[in-house]
Amino acid sequence: MKSFLLLLCFLVLATTPLLAQTSKSDSLYTPRSDQKKKAKNRPWVFAGNVSFQIKPLLINASPLLGYKFTDNLVAGLGPTYIYNKEGLVSPVATSKPGPMHVYGGRVFVARRLYKPLFLQAETEALNYPYFDDREDKRRDWVVNPLAGLSLNMNTGGKSFFQITVLYNFNYNNNDFNKQLYNSPWVFRLGAGLGGGKK
Image (cartoon, helix red, strand yellow):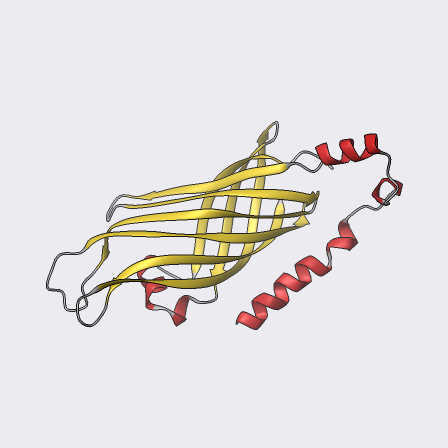
């Protein structure tokens, strides 16, 4: 599965020149005034998602900072914080479930397939608490490769609304993933600002 994700990321990056428009302004001899215009036309993109669940209380906040390399390619990174009120469970169930604080980050690359539809691949690294067999509280890292589709709908100006569906290729290989996510499919709703035309 990991080799599949690496292949997917390679295909996304390798096909970038096919959609990028080339012109004289892309040469090394571009006048400085044209370089300034070009820099303004490749803006930073601020996005992310916040999700809530009532029972049990679960809060997920994941802001993102991306850079729009072309009209068809965006890449970036961002921190992730997850609070789960009843996520920390003792393996011998001698006490009530306690709150779980999960933190980490993710890097992503998104490639436009058609108009608002993007192919997205990312790597998510999360640090989570758990109890070992001797009831000692410990923390560990889990790295999840994800890939799927993102639908970005313009809501006026440079703002947009985003629906993302990703598949977690590491879901069955780690008990923490089964505890945090209900399935290998990860659904996100988010919003963003930025991404002017190239």
